Length: 376
Image (cartoon, rainbow, N blue to C red; front, top):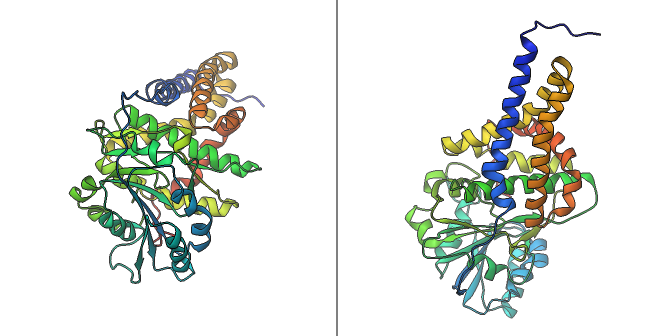
């Protein structure tokens, strides 16, 4: 069946498609190539600063037993402490921590036995941990995370210089069989591609609590989370959105500085996790919402407009324009995946590219959804 459209419509569709491709090319050349070809600045000497590692946990006895040793056995000779904030747990977390305390004197734990009124989510326990920290540099991770190597503390704190107050790290997920694992890991990589690249472009907008560091004085001078206490989520991304800027932020992508987590095993669990994370996006700075929104829109539109251009205008011209974007995308993703130790995902990148528009549409309602108050 032939599709009949007015003669002027087909060129408009093709030019709109070209504009979308141009927007995508811009993002890959201006933003994402920064991570793909990033080289960490060389330092004549590496200092080791005292560090306070902070982990918040609620009913995480099993995860603490499994993953806390990876933090406690770090190869870091300089003074450091590990603070676990046990937030109203009703499981055996306290007894697990008491046992660890017998062998690791640097471990301290704070027992919270009452819920904070008017402060939802993870912010109150995290604030208690930061306020109790003895050292200026705080390094954050979650109870279900483990450092990829024993050099995690050293690599993360080594990014600090006189001007740096925020250090963004990568929280990866373990590699497991199955397509869901690949989708989760690609989405995690894709998110990191954006926040690392934006930071390198002087527009830092978020970090992830699985692997994040900043200075205690900056937190206190900002009055902690006081301006976002009413928002259940945002203790990592929204806080960083407020305090990070082009001069005070550094990134660490060395695989030795990654943390690892066990990914969700069902679609529903993963979607619930992503809905919770995306509820803070509407509170980002306007400029960040613009750049992130324009990129997401271009991803959603690229394939429908490609199909329309092939059918209504000229198939080989449409494919030629798309091919330019595909070659650039393949190169940048390949290099960036190597940087973040996710190279095994590259052969699947075209499939992921087809999937991402559906992912954005599925998770879009989270932007307007009321956040849940529980953080765990």
